[in-house]
Length: 120
Length: 110
Image (cartoon, rainbow over the protein chains, first blue to last red):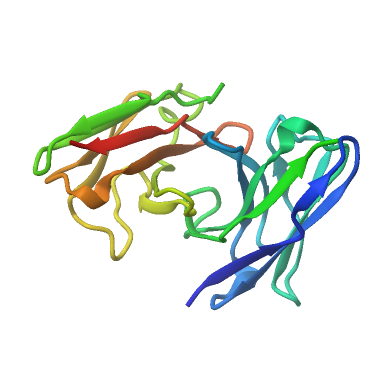
């Protein structure tokens, strides 16, 4: 069945960088847009970024624009999130998420999440 | 501050129906039919319950239904059951190729 597995989370100091990776399996990865959504401890969901099925289009949430970069490798079925200039408010569980049918329509497959803690 | 407004909590007794609202603007909920709803149990990832305002994915109980009027979308849970106790989030596509989420609603089964 369709599955997403995130990796790369951990504890990082403010101002430093971290790269998350998401490995997809069980579905035709190359035809779906992929997103990252985060959830701060005890808080709600926040959309972070999206990359189109072929990588040609990328969009970001206002709070991460200019600091985070999303990328994908359709030959390896992976999507990455490069996070630079990290801040305490970036502390969250980061979920890799698959679009359901169309661009931006809904999110049907979620990974288990990767925890990122930004702290000195 | 979440872009979409949801009530912080809603409660009901087993068997009752409850409705959760999700209010946005004409640039998100009111302007597009890409409104979806997610259920999240503690320490679990969210689960898609409703997509494109009214549609249920395969495997989701027909006790869950969605609707929209103007800038407000709604999720109704009929025949409330203990397993429905969870957090619920609405989401909408927004102008500028963004996605907005609501702040979440905690559903309590009394």
